[in-house]
Image (tube, rainbow, N blue to C red; front, top):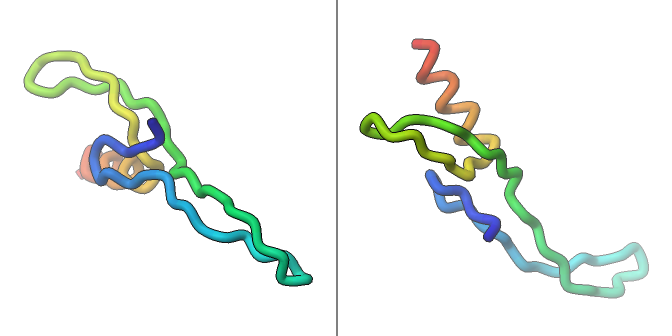
Length: 62
């Protein structure tokens, strides 16, 4: 579900630790955006993380 189509960054599980050191499980999800693009002439929708989106836009301008 929450996975980048380019770099395959996905959800991460870990522990959230409070000030009193009580621990509870927590998930971190990547910052995904939907990107409409064309690959080999066919329009495609991709789920892309913000880092990959930034890199793609940088390559687009050069």
